[in-house]
Image (spheres, rainbow, N blue to C red):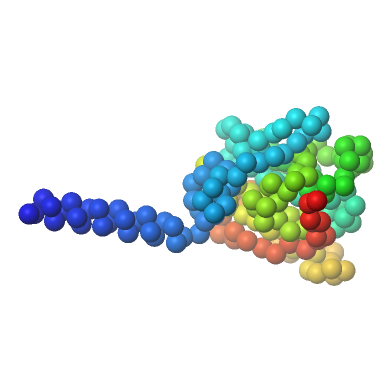
Length: 207
């Protein structure tokens, strides 16, 4: 009887832990790719050679950074120098960066011209069917989503707080959110500010 009682308590404890885990922040669940409704999403991302790429297959990365951009969004384009500075600082520290172009109407030629014009040295990916947009629930450009090891989302939001609102911009940011997040990840510290509200151009719906 005692053994049966111990078994019952153990099973009850395990069941309680499972329930607690399900009620927690879904961003904290250790997964290899974004999960939506309990189903691992199939990402349909393309490089500029129309080859399918799974960005979550990056190995030995401390974090994977997705930067959603638009070729014709002035707010997004003004961040090009800062994005390049962040890449130059943190890529050597084991952080993987991807430029994500979610606008279905952006042709390969337009994207190549955009990369050249703004001197991007980060690998670009296209998301014409919005697989990653839906997985991350990204809404605007520029918007950043950062995943740590095992697919844990550690940050989503703005690059910094330079843009207060549409048409309202500080001369200099008072907080460099993405820099703080990447510095914490690179140095093994906990990210304390997981979500901010980005200001930018809305991502158009996929056809």
